[in-house]
Length: 90
Image (cartoon, rainbow, N blue to C red; front, side):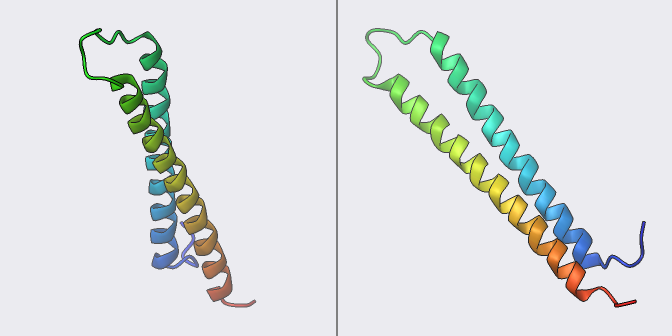
């Protein structure tokens, strides 16, 4: 490990990576759910628009994943700029 990188930089990197992983998890989970929704059988006497309600829930989860990913990228960029600006000049 390079000792020039302060603890705050490492925590920022960790937060950014965790946001990226969480966003990817939400997005992949929603994509798989949407694929499975195509083959799911909904009974004729079931609640109306049950498939649409489930799709809407999965669509929202995919958008949450995209937002988490974007926040992760933003955190990583801000952390890199912050660490670069605070680095001692040679």
